[in-house]
Image (cartoon, rainbow over the protein chains, first blue to last red):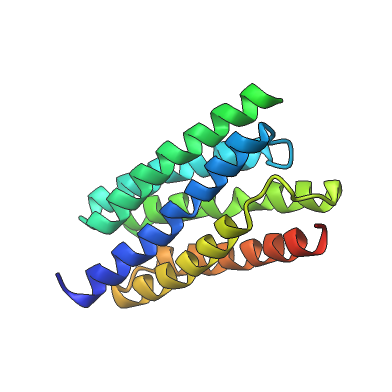
Length: 84
Length: 84
């Protein structure tokens, strides 16, 4: 694997795993009122498009990172709706 | 501009503008306790690396989207620290 792809994977890993402490915190607090619903919806829509873009330009880091992030954002979105 | 680049820009626009309603909401509520500090720090670090990756693979949508998003995330990070 070359350096560029590795940097892409590292970038993807960071932005993706960043949602893990967030999901844990929201789960523990049972509260997500500080989150903007518009933000979560727009972000999820963006993740779907980023994945499509990644498939188009054949960038595995983009595909992998955005698919997993989408899953975590969907969990946050579900908690935002559930806890309000 | 071809369709692929356009899709990339649209994806970038969505994920980037998603932070605008969030910054407005946090600014109005003067509260960001539901946010995980680890999330914001990891996400910001990821944005820096994504920008580097975008420069490497010469993808303008990735460079533009991540630079602006980084700015908005830094504002959120500042409010998270300020309001706690």
